[in-house]
Amino acid sequence: MSRTARIERVTKETKVLVEIDLDGTGQAEISTGVGFYDHMLHQIARHGGFDLTVQTVGDLEIDAHHTMEDTALALGAAFDQALGDKAGIRRYGSATVPMDEVLVRAAVDLSGRPYVVHDEPALAPYIGPVYPTSMTRHIWESFGQSARITLHVDVLRAARPGGHPDAHHVVEAQFKAVSRALREATAIDPRSAGVVPSTKGAL
Image 1 (spheres, one colour):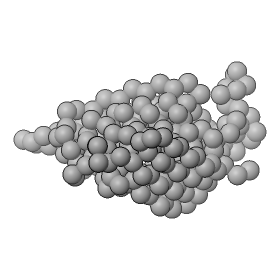
Image 2 (cartoon, rainbow, N blue to C red):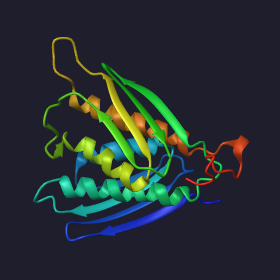
Image 3 (tube, one colour):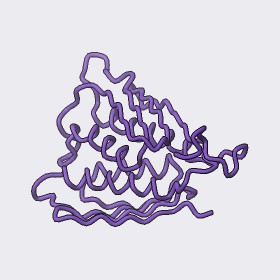
Image 4 (cartoon, rainbow, N blue to C red):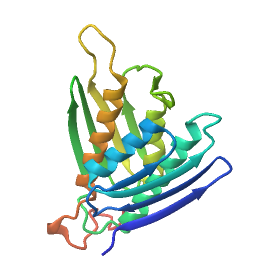
């Protein structure tokens, strides 16, 4: 069974196209106009093992908020669509990812109930010229809402000796951890073929 999706989201602020194959090989074509965000979406494809296309044109002349938010909403909707009735999946996934001095834990439940918990230290306001670090929480909230999942993301360690957290490492480790957790949760469980992993019989 094909676990693919194509989502087009068009508003007065953005135009977003997302295509995903949950059973891909980590190939990605990403273009949002926000360089660091592109880099993070590549992490989702590579470390999640998903084939992913994201093409976003947004009102970057204002700021990056609408572009990043609407991309996250479309990406979540694509995951939700590609999962279908969720029969046979593992449902739960978690990962703890180190990146130099940073350690991040992510846990996912493909529950059908949107709920996001996000905890990170105060960071420098920008990574690169366009990516506002305050948007990372909003990305996870938007993604979790439209994907209809429970998502916990916790930065367990971040401080460098004698210095402030490296914002690049803190955010990138989050994307890698969430990607690995999604990879596990979306995987087919060979012991539960065709069975929805819930006593309710639906997710």
